[in-house]
Amino acid sequence: MRTYKLGAVAFLGAALFANGAAAQAYDEEDEDLLSRIGLALTVGGGVSGFTNEEMRDTADVGGTWDVRAAFGTRSPIALEAGYVGSAQAIDAIGLDTDAVLVGTALEGLARVNLLPEQRINPYFFGGAAWRRYDLTNADTNTSDVVETDNLLEIPVGAGVSYRIAGFVADLRGSFRIATEEDLIRTDVGEESPKLHTWSASAKLGYEF
Image (cartoon, rainbow, N blue to C red; front, side, top):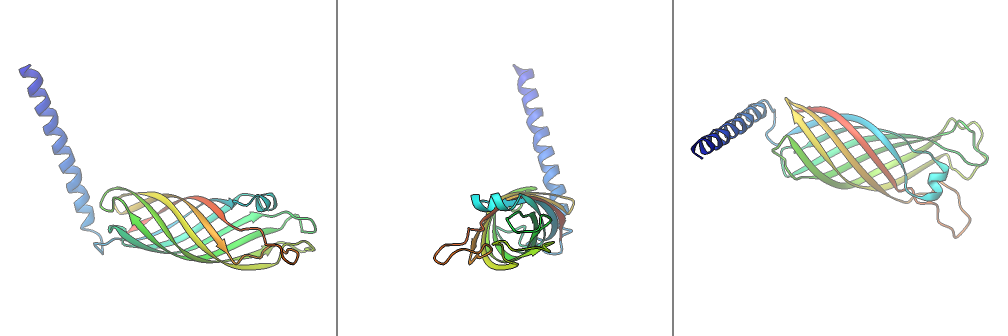
């Protein structure tokens, strides 16, 4: 029994020492930050697609990419500014078979960091965005798909970031609620299909 107690004390002591060393190492990394609130730049990509059934039949799941600046990565609340691009093959009667639907978005987000001072930080976010869709590679277009469409979006989602030695890895999923869309021509009195989208992406960057 005495041996057991000594072993337990030794184990707990080692665990506390290791935890303290890790915390100290992390604090030393924090000292290298230019700002105590945390500033980060990330770039990455992933996949995205439409949630509306009619739009899923028209446009394939495609690629997405983004560049982001985050302010307050070490605070409970952070702000993000980002550029988001996308490209999807699109198919409709009367449309060139090589046509691609290209999206360009500028967005601002508010992010709630659940564990802002830890290496692993889960978070959720919401905000607003402007997006423009352009139909490209369409030498022939007698379809109901218009050449351009501008709309407003409400992006919401969740993710998790991991940081070490100044570097940041980030995984997130998002849902973008679209408004004011008219990408598909419709008859008088009919609504254009909704352009709500989903996306999953991974990013790498650096925290200052």
